[in-house]
Image (cartoon, rainbow over all chains, first blue to last red; front, side, top):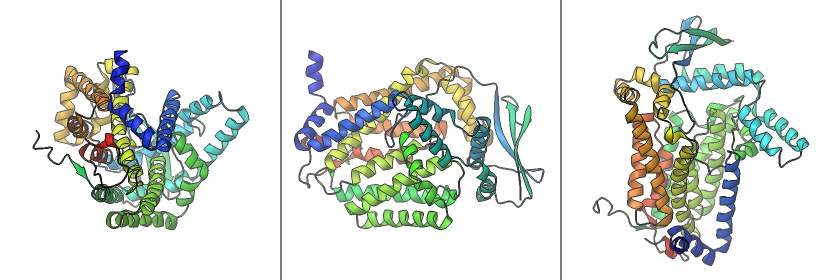
Length: 188
Length: 279
């Protein structure tokens, strides 16, 4: 009972009462936003611009023993990239391309949300949604041409062949890779 | 302490709007040099739709694909955005602010989808932008108050999420994140190597730091109950952003714009200002 009395005096409660009294329309919109946000959170989703600030919240459990990064060779010479921001920008599309190839052009995170939707929507609707979503968001065949011009925005270099490798390093030796895996080669 | 916060007072809507669009303009110029204007993503082959259903809807409409289908469309979009930001800084009108916000919605979601990661910090400008859409209307103070509660939700939900996912009880969490995210930065920057070594060699320090951040974020629950401690929450907000920049090298400039709602409150110049918004 005391808790209820206290809640009545809180800033949020006073604000909502005030809004309800002066602008009922705004009050119902606020309620709708709260319901939609909580509803999407249940399936670990969100509705822009509202979200759960989940950065750094993925459980880790173990300290890694190795680390990997993408290394670029233009005409068989190592491309020196001193800025980590630049490396991140040119590596990100490669990482996505590699993952999409591994998963047959699909994204597991998206598929999981589609599975959740199949509980409330007919299977035919979910299947059509999946088809349209992938058709409009992924074009693997266009990657090669696009990446070459994207790479040039960050690294101004002329080359006839650009090879990308994924290098794995031990945490105690970041100079010599333990393993080098070729990912993709681009030709001019 | 009181002297520091003498600026903690009511401001008219023109001042709040100008302050906001000045920050938007600064950020927009920085974004040009970070290559995140849309003309940098022409013909992008993948859009990361992720878990957010709003991104799904936007991609299904085909709007991002249309804008990025040619360099001319993309650069026209960028130029229009620039004009609208400057226009709203000089002569703000509800209509032009709303048009800017709609385009900003599209820009944020398109650039995030094209970049491959949903950078949530942009939401600071979006939320404050929604508030500015009620410029010189009786809804402005409600929107301003909602922005304040959004800050409380943002931090409190972040802390609760970490607790429910068990991260708060994981001794190696921060240590492990540092290795995964920043080992190469430490390799290149001597000043950062010192911080990196500090956190990765002293496990107790990394756990204590993470635990402190969770407590700090949890403290924002107080903001739902009372406005008495807003100045301290403002201080914690800035402290969080500065520490995050030092340890993780991410600076959430766009999110910091939300602190305007802790710093100021709308002056009683418009009819319909809520009594509860007065501090």
